[in-house]
Length: 95
Image (cartoon, rainbow, N blue to C red):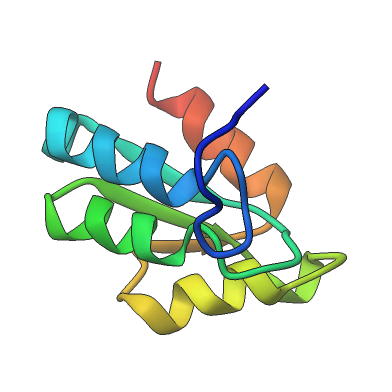
């Protein structure tokens, strides 16, 4: 159970996870944002991009709740906007 302060109304915060991972893994990191009900993740995915990582966002048209994906698209230039099945195929090709 997480007890730290909420970031963007979330605890644990994907923003903090992405920021930490981006700092440590830089261009070796792939950040993926999927459907979600708040803006948590947008600043984190921006840091992934800033540190040279690859960024992927689920196509907002496919999302049940596109708040998280739309916030990410507004925060930075995302490398790939894909439907879920496209994300899976993309990741499998990286093996």
